Length: 118
Image 1 (cartoon, helix red, strand yellow):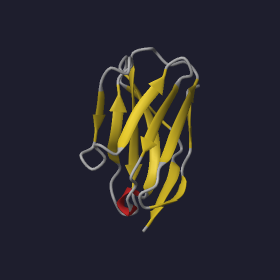
Image 2: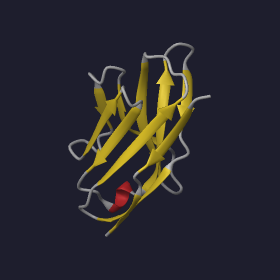
Image 3: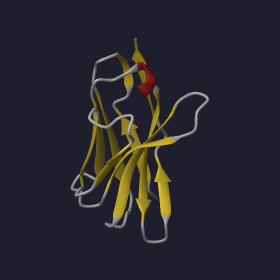
Image 4: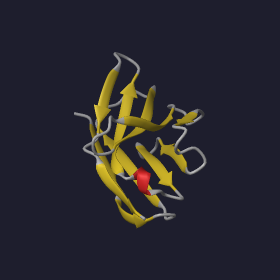
């Protein structure tokens, strides 16, 4: 059974930093993409950042470009999201996602709250 466990969320002042981690357990095929999404109250879930299996390609939402950085450690089956220069509008529940290309299967974590105070 595949499980994704996020950690690293919390309360931070505007301009501060947080690093989210997502550890994946269970059997995952090596060809996959790992992503971070977020959902603020009253809004739809949105893609924040994504990274390919090798880590060679990354993508970011325009709203976080230059401030957030996604990375992964395949030996540890872990993906990270370094968030710098945080803004109150970054406040949301952040979800880790792994998309397995074979079969088009999605797995989700339970989410971690990030709150940025002004």
